[in-house]
Image (cartoon, rainbow, N blue to C red; front, side, top):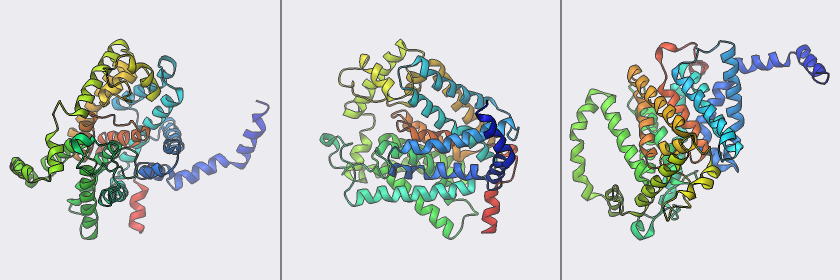
Length: 420
């Protein structure tokens, strides 16, 4: 204490902490930090060790959330918050009980904790400013992806050349993997789609959102991820179902789209019709991976720990021949079960069920579209194999819990937009 006493005395006398706190609150830096985190994170891929750059922002938001909670500036925890807290505890506990690295578990927990500040961000009705900046980010990422394909720069190493050599490669844009890109697109595409048809968006804004929607949809197609295609089809169906009476009426004509399948380019047609073909290499590969993951789960019902190192240490002992080098379960629910055990899977399913119940209660259908599309792809891939994807996923899941009756304060972003 003798060492820290002068330091604490200096801080009290100069009131540095109080001044810093006042500055942060006056300029609403936490909200700006979160907005920057969830809209600009694709551009972190341009930096070396991209996940490492996300952690300081997540740590700041977590500490500010704890400060707000203890000062009772936020509503009390509800059932969903306790479920996420339990997931965090399970992630951290694998440091002691699992086979992975402590840094992987702590990183996952810190990125997942974005949920708590996301709850505050959505309570303050910041949707409009989020939709604008996320659409701007989506447009840039999608345009880069479309440009990759147009100029012959798409990745061919992700393609089964013996079966799909004519697709010309799969786009990755700013990401290192086309499937990771597809997860990002599915989570953000519904916001620009919904904004295109909002009555208050007219003129240039409607054109901007429409262009973003078109580029986003094309980029999803050019990832050539069949799981993402299924997610996109579900998102379009849910949009038509919940947007308006006119769009619900249009669903009746959806079966007529089957007539257009023979008119598709041969590469799109062959890729689309391969869905469900158990003889296709990547589908057979996934089925065999699921078999090995289920066997591993039976032997480790309490989980093996978070991270790729834990998976590589245990999975080869249960792998079906030919799949020993696989790096994840290719299924988000199996991945959660193998990492966090049966308890983690139950908690995760309860949280999704709670989120969907709140969506239907509050009629927050944009969130339903975004999360549903991503979860459909999650049946075939690990949604956050790149740990940074934990940030948008948990932020969108928190958006599902938004309630119009729980707004506690006016957003500074609304004032800023009016001043502009």
